[in-house]
Length: 339
Image: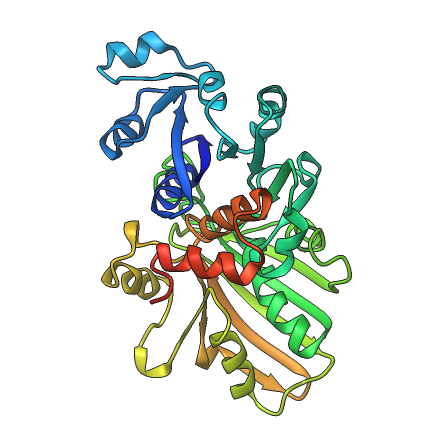
């Protein structure tokens, strides 16, 4: 029997998670939730996803717009084993009572505080910690990228010190109400929230993060300086370690991928839906080892990087896969992240 999955929220993350669930051989998408009869609601119907009305949405508004709905969020929860909450930041916490009343497991996104769930989750780092849990929180996009990289570096070399500067996109492409338009905005928080968020997975990770916001919508970029405890012999060893780990894309010099625009063009050219890049993106030329000091750039696609983590969290919580490797293999094959 496939696990029955509901997706509450059909926006930037929710629609991608819904599509990903629909591709999995051991999951059934039983419905998605929208609050307004927007083009996103019509997209759900076009995809054949049962549509339900949530929040302050009104059934009559959808029907007046000619959009068929199957009921309300509460109706959907009665048909699900687990719900992926992809509602806007801080709205997910308001849904906890509904999920508990319906006796469904729930996955929250990184926009919620860690205490909304029993554990924060990353597939490479702590898959087993989510086994059998009722509420799990997938890390934010940037923290997902950091923890994936930490999973490689901690295990192979040990980390004595990690300093990261996050150059953050100002908005998602559809968020026309956000800025900045012509500015670079420092974030006056030391460390930025990403370091303590990573430490919900690796409490002993000696990392400090700072962040600036720049006027782009394409991706985030991390500038990393890591002091390794057991440095390898060469930069090439580090490149190999990243390249051999699932969910890392390491571009070669000859690829002529100079920055984030070419990364997303690469994804589009390889048939990725919406041009999504669900892997951490690194460059061979952007990885440099000097003694024990490792420097590397990595780019993070904020719209899609957490999608495979949500799928693996479903498997971890419901026992569909015995371990991280098994789940990642199925997820990545279904999503076209490996051949």
